Length: 168
Image (cartoon, rainbow, N blue to C red; front, side, top):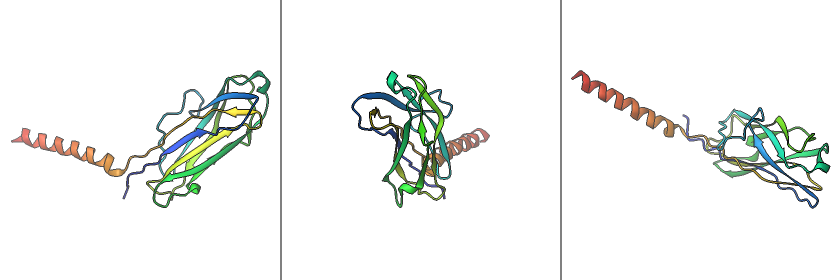
């Protein structure tokens, strides 16, 4: 039986400590063309690919290599564990201009056995040392079965009722 899957995945860019430089970061779609939607929906057994978009990189930080980091935190759900989600990133990113997108670099997979009501927070960042990273947020939700099935059943019932009235 399919139940309401509320997979609240707030994807935020990790705020790193820094003193000398800063850049803005956001998560974009897989091709790096548009900001990732909010909410993002990932059902158990599915995954989403995102791009890491950096803007306002200081000239001295261009062509510097920044290590990726990620952290998964459970926010709710019966039996939910951080290991339900797998975040895959490259080891590092090297921006070649002041605005740079690491296209399709991040994959977040929801395990097939994860609970239907699991909610997670995922933090992804690149940098450290002298680089300070901004944050971005995304929520991921999956509606439960009754939330989808009941309106559809009501519409079908109404159509059947109206058809019966026309036949009489």
